[in-house]
Length: 78
Ligand SMILES: [Zn+2]
Ligand SMILES: [Zn+2]
Image 1: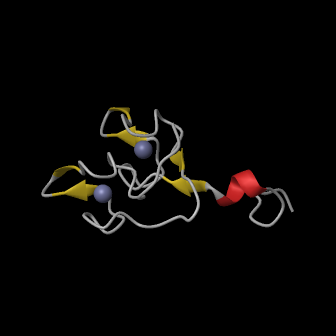
Image 2 (image 1 turned 90 degrees about the horizontal axis):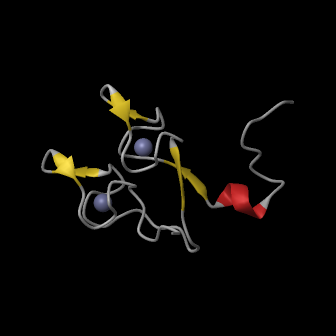
């Protein structure tokens, strides 16, 4: 077992969620994702909830969601 993001071991891992804006790729087109900074993941606070506006998609009306800032999650750390 050699997981990059172990799910059961570390509390921090539970709060690391895939960036909805870039779909976890870390890129938005040709440039680094402005939401996650190229990591492909964002940190969120508990309780983790999907963004009510974009429903976890990170985009709303073809643009970056203004509620979750493109993360797809309701409460983002930092
Ligand atoms: Zn991203
Ligand atoms: Zn949103």
